[in-house]
Image (cartoon, rainbow, N blue to C red):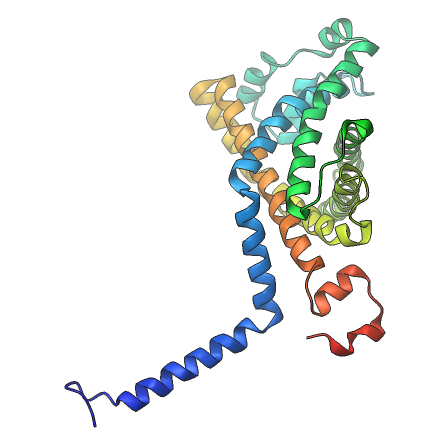
Length: 297
């Protein structure tokens, strides 16, 4: 018997039952399990606050080390010119940057070997922020101060990767396949770095093979962000320089560091979810034998 609108209650009940069955089947799939694990990881990690912390620490810790490295590097260009060339700034924005970044002569005369060591030790604040992030993602205890060398090893790895990629870009500049070569180099270098960094920061509590998935995802994300940044970053920095001078450029650069940090954080959370998956994806990531796949869902 139908109601006032002519709807069959039995038909409505059957449709609701079919929808419920479809939802249950969806919840039993690997894609649903992976999505749930990623969503749970994001909620637990507080991604926006943590990414902003990483961006601020990178700006105050890594950027000064890069400036010192550029000043003592083989190139005779100053740190400001090197940064402007890497980003592709216009002459106006380059002039604004030149007034805020010391020249190579100023850096060399004011910083000796002891100063470089102090800069590296100070930069470990970024390493500690990364350590807190990875410990939260993988739900492990943070190592103690007895192995503080891990923080310095992290900074050296990140700075060396940036320098290596810069050398690669200069070597391939103007080539037919320079874009492809640069992207391949970025993926290879960043995969190695973002697999090594959590491995050493967590004092090898998580196997490198398990961390490789997150490292690869981080590398791909950074390669995509690099391609986007080649277009976006010069515009953002020049706009900031015109409106607010060096302060505007600082805000724009911190915003970009936030985007990069967020990409690494998301990739790390997804990498953990893939590594702990109960299906074939997790078995591949963990490197389990093919003979164990017979019961994979």
